[in-house]
Amino acid sequence: MPHPFKLLLFDLDGTLMLSGGAGSRAIDTVFVRHFGVANAFDGIQPHGMTDPMIFRELFERHGLEISDEAGTIAQLAEEYRRELSIEMPVSKQAHLMPGVVPLLERLAAAPGVVMGLLTGNFEPTARIKLTRFDLNRFFPFGAFSTDSANRSDLPPVAIRRAEEHVGRLIGRGPHVYVIGDTPMDVRCALDNGVTSVGVATTKFTVDDLRQAGAHIVLDSFADTEMALNALGVPS
Image 1 (spheres, rainbow, N blue to C red):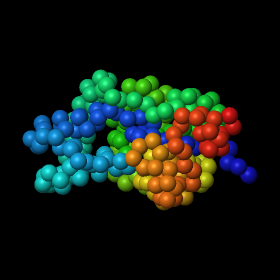
Image 2 (image 1 turned 90 degrees about the horizontal axis):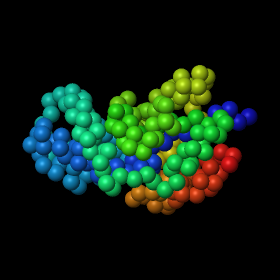
Image 3 (image 1 turned 135 degrees about the vertical axis):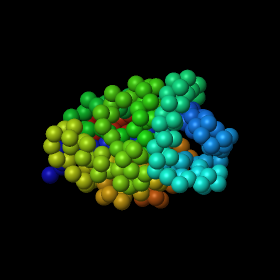
């Protein structure tokens, strides 16, 4: 018997939108102020990484000896939030990925579909990015790197919050979908026994995502009916 709920957990950067460099500019500002390191983000490949992982890579890359890593990351996260709140609203290159709003609107109206976020962003900065395009209305809950630096730890957090949101058990299984644009998103789903949906909107191709083990792969969300069909949601 099919599960009465289909839980769709969306990654943010590269899947729903791109910040047009707002995030990297905000981090660069923080590292100049905090450490005197200019252009700290140059050369970083953030695809699929959580924000704490990015900060740790920056510490290592720039030879920064951090005695209290957790405390320092928490402090930097707050500084990053402040800078991103300045950068994101005016980021000229920020844009939604193709078809995102039509798809989310259809999913929000579909019976038995529950949507949340599963992202490597800290929650406050994820909300700032979503605010730019009025997307927070679609995502009343989620799991973030505020909860864990390890992406594969996040599905149980998101499922628990989904259950609190709908007021009943959802549990783990193929009715839970983790939707993202990188092999790390695919691995996160596979590690948790849920359905992986890869969307080839950034540097990883359909073949890359399929080889990583994604159960479903889309070129993009541009064709709403095709995306709904792939997700098993009646159109």
